Amino acid sequence: STTCGDLDYGLLLSVTKDSKTCDAVKLDFTQTCCYTYPQEQCTLCRKGLVYYNVRSELNVTMPDGTEASCGLVNKMLAPEENGGEKCVTTQDALFDACCYDQCSLCEGQGLKWWVEFDEPAGEGGRKTQENSEEEEETWAEDEDNEVDNEEDAKDIEEEDEEEEEEEE
Image 1 (cartoon, rainbow, N blue to C red):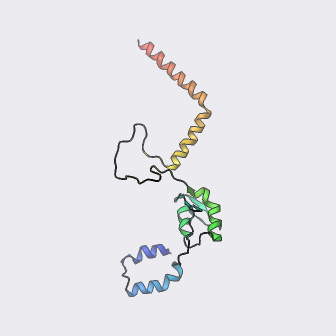
Image 2: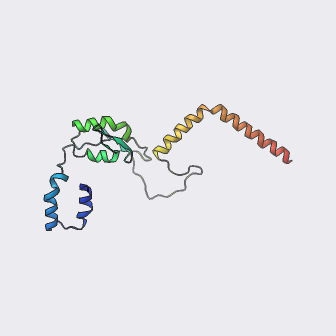
């Protein structure tokens, strides 16, 4: 078993356009593998005129019961007309799980990709959306335990002071 993508990007890489092999494969698989572009292509992570980012690797269940990654669902919607029943149903069902508005450093401006700089101490590099969300959850949990954390910090300070006095 293979996919149309594997056929097009794999097998046909070494086949020239004007060859008999190319003509034969096109004749056999065009009906199965090709579609006419819709006037306005469906995109999973679009609301009105606003496009959102796709969580490409996240696995979800489509309204028809098919399991696929959000990235694959987005590709599967490409032949559909924006506003069509399948497009709207799938967007409604999966938008919250698959789509997000990514933070942009230079929103509305160009990014100087080539500029290098030293990151501020303690930052530890860029954070992914998932890491940031986990950090927010941890921070919220820590807020609930704020008194305990303050008391623990005071205990540690007192222990440190006692150790210093003993050393003198």
